[in-house]
Length: 363
Image 1 (cartoon, one colour):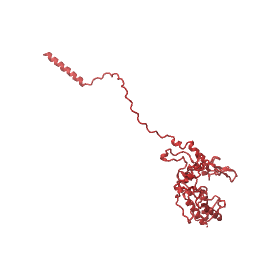
Image 2: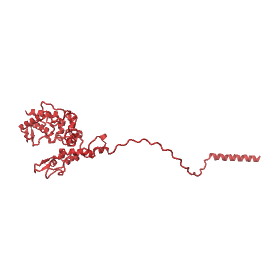
Image 3: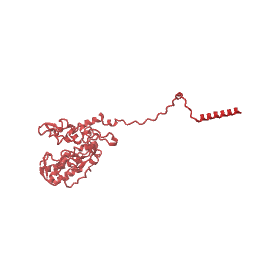
Image 4: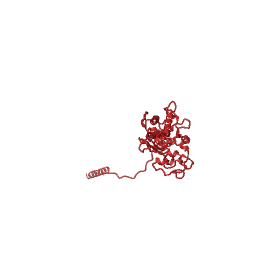
């Protein structure tokens, strides 16, 4: 009996030990050796190639290449800017280039390369009274060149910001004649910077006009204001003046499109700045006009009337003196159209009104 109780007790004890073993955390043994790597899987199928990016130099090469520059340089050599014609210096009698003849503070901003760069950059024009001993800028290095009008691009994102052609001046131009009026001709602003009147004695009133020199008038380049239809002396008369900025050559063309268009035979357009008939034919399908109808006859009539009035010489120089408002204003109009050099084509309606009404005022 005692043996049975002992056996039962031992069985209970063994069961207790087994229960404790099952409900307690086992003690971890040492880590076994790593198993061998499995076999690599099969490579997946290659994806579709992406679209090629834009060549980073393509937009540069479009302009900065010999094939593009050679025609430009060839046409530039035909221009008055490149020719830099000779002038006889009044003081010495020397034959010198225009850029040296005008190399003085009062002229340098448009007639010398460095003067123009200073002007459009907002720097003062160098002082100097001119040839031979007091030049504003270095002698013999002032011919208008590529570097005069072009510098560096303001942006290379041409698609978004537009092509600026690395022009030095894109901004609207405030005219020198009154310091207030502003014109905006886009890429032609680079031209209008200099091709504008540079005299400030505009005869706008009814008082007598005093002519102080043989160079009275919008010396030397009123092309931009003639195209715009402003700063002629709008004498009242039988011919009405067109609205400002309404000329077709202002609204549908520009300095650049007419003077720098595709060349016909290599002697016009591009950087020769000689008007190209190719551009004219876009509108003038029967051929490019050379002058406004009746312009030459009216211009000669006005010339003769001013010679008779004493304000103009036969050769076209103005005569210093004091004249009536009608004579002074008609003289201004004559010199404006003479200096414009387009035979009225820049703004036919405005040119015709200036001529006709000036003639009527003197007859």
